[in-house]
Amino acid sequence: MRLLRLNDMTYKGLLDSEILKEVLDAPNGLIGIDINDIKDLFQQDGEISTIDVRVNAREEHRMEQLMEQIKKKGKSLSSYTRALIYFFFPEKCPLMMEELRPFSEWIETFPGECMIKWGMATQSAQELRAIVLLQ
Image (cartoon, rainbow, N blue to C red; front, side, top):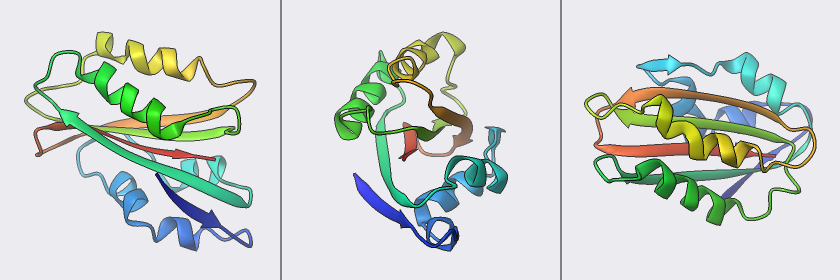
């Protein structure tokens, strides 16, 4: 897990991060995230934890495997009140609605009020990937 620092009410450091550029510039976005979503989520100073996980898109239970990796790297959710989650999947192995159940169950584990924005895009790589930013 990497940490980004948001300082002095400027988003430059966050917006310059390669991992966020991948989300904002996703060419095949089905559910997009834009700069306004980022501003809504990360308005306050503080560290932003970034998680980038991948599994083989052809594996059985691929979403469960992906969510387990996120849980391990995200550790305790009690300190997070804001989350951005973006999924990338191969066009030939689409992410199906019924596969989102582990994601939905994970969201329900966030304590109290938490602002969450998520999206998804297709990619050429044959992997299911998630980019997660937590604050």
